Image (cartoon, rainbow, N blue to C red; front, side, top):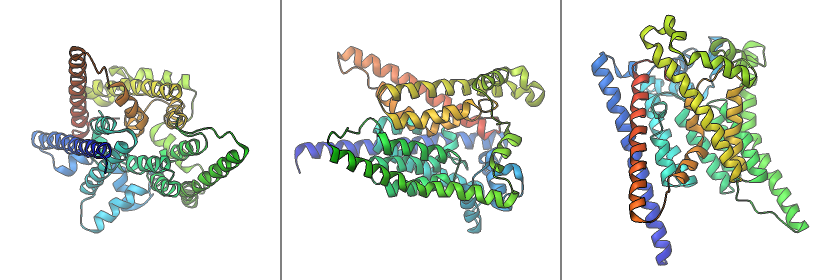
Length: 389
């Protein structure tokens, strides 16, 4: 083994250890927040970790799709919660266990895709609380990030199987299949251009083979649609549930923005949430920030000719921009691994002179501290039952 390869392996091991420490530290911080909420509000562990959509997933696990509105949720997570309950584990606890495992696997994949900094930044993202409770974010990111990593390594059957797993968890699996198709055809800024006719023919055959593997996750999505059709007689049961339950009917981007702006004012929510109206309004302001961030990342990827990454973020921004209003975009940023890769690249800073390097590190330290504070605040909102996106 050469000195260079030994150095690379040592750096990789050190980076992996830092990611593991960040995973452990970030989960520990949120655990402390949960314990403080439990003590201060006299609540049980299940009460602080079982808020909002967790209740829907547990309801599906218990009763199937008895409530038509819950057809807005995919069956993968409820099936796992049901499995945990059969073993005698409370569903809220199963959700936390799955979140811990999923977030670790997702960070590992992101470490392989973009390196240490993107993986660590993902672990301390403001909305990280959704990766430690019974939500789909952690498991979906684990499956989706590894699907992307395997596709980049030209292991397309493995990527397709992982994408199929992602498609059991949330509708974002549809966007993943689309982005993987773009990756198969034009790459992500790392594909060469064959010049000879024979090379072009080989390239075409390779693209067809790659795209054919994506039939696997597509079949999973079709199977879920078919299952809902069997239950309801409608092929649009999922979108109807989204519209009736969460007001996510189709609109134009201008209308979506117009509907969202009033939600950013506390008085809009005064009659519903009372003293909590300000917190809800802040969440909707942050939804606007998340959409803007998605647009910036999309443009950044286009400039860097990362076509597949641009499509992965761009298609989601479009989807959020044609609903009634911007909702759950804050959580969706966890799915945008190109965002964390871009942040990692932006954080590199100067290599000299020493004074400027020290200043840059200080600025980065302040930003991380603020980020951690926001992460704690977001966790506090969720654990106390406040609207958290």
